[in-house]
Image (cartoon, rainbow, N blue to C red):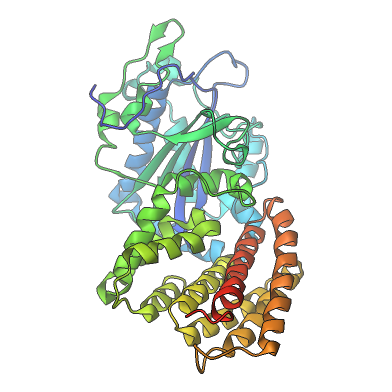
Length: 467
């Protein structure tokens, strides 16, 4: 088989004892699970291993289930229910599934699991995924005989963890946000190469994304024989688009792997491309939707977004680039956000203010930051200090609204210095909280970094007489 250029094949990658199948939806720029099933050998035969050709055949079944017209109405109804649930009804921790599921070795335990809110709210999707992965019968399409295939499944294993923290599993993820454009991702954990910072790996391993045909070629040995690659099943995926691996990693790991307190990640190609598209499209009304999609694609790089955006603006913005267009784009891209994303939205508005200051369009930035501080004040007692820190920024920037080149007063200097000290304390607190696996702590930390950048601009540039 001929592989596309750039696809890495690791024949030495060992077969797995467990692989997770996810059906997810993109809700507020985050992958949210509707159903999760684990493919494992039988509980009493742990010596068996799962071969990847066998798993590819199972994945092809899942795709047929999601794309079949007979299932469309039911799946669309559950997709709408998932959007409502993840937006309004669930706590952030439970929504991301960061708690181990119950053991499911008996029929009673399986029935109890299907009554669990995370699965019970979407029973059609959950039962469909379970049927696809656990179905008995003719499994020749999966690269195995029917006699062996029936022994290769069980529902969720007691040792399975939604958080994927140990990276002991592969993951096959299907995004059903658009049933006419189903996307997939296949991620496998591999040893981290030398030089990767500890914050970007888990137990010395990193996750790589594979094309389905490359994944099928890995670990083909089965009990002394060879498992043939299921060509028909692999061809199913040739025309499907891929989910961005960063979004999948965020869902599987959560924010624990974000190296917030150290240097930028070594690879920022996704952010660079998205930011370039964002900047180039921001001045064109017709390109706002495309730019908003680019912003969603680089959501995982938010802690470094402000600096990257400044670099991108400097490299790509034309002299006639309208600064108001960027603020409009930011507001439109996050207009529908509810409480699960208030912190991210607030952070983006802080960044919009930083850009506005750079481009002498302060009024829009003041309005955005006022909304951000209001959102953060309503977000809980844990973020009260951050809210107080951000609350002073609009008052500080109003000094410069009337005449951006005006000479600042001593009161303005003292206020800016006081606010900068407050932000420094907030960054220190939130930096510790961010390591406790809370998404909004990480976002609040990033918001404070944006605030520090604003103060730096005001104190070191504008207040020193710079233009």
